[in-house]
Length: 83
Image (cartoon, rainbow, N blue to C red; front, side, top):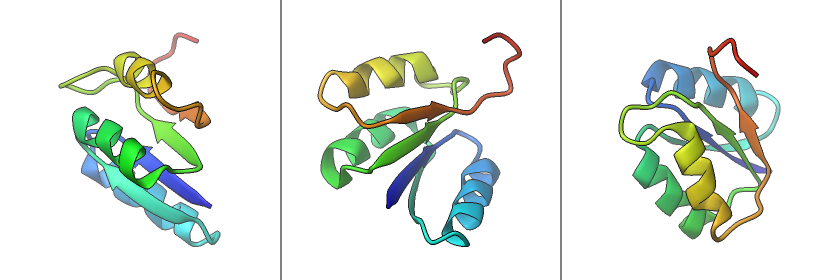
């Protein structure tokens, strides 16, 4: 299963990738929102782990942009304390 981890924090995407790879997942990482959207178009991951708080586009904007062309499952991973 191919998973895309999107977070502006490189340490967080590296940690997520390391943990998922130990369980057999193929992991792609992106640290820039617009780049991540292009990766979704090109590599068609089976699932996405998405941070909400990013500087260039917030996670909600990224989610909306992806939904324009894909129904890939998106898991929101964030430090925000508001559901």
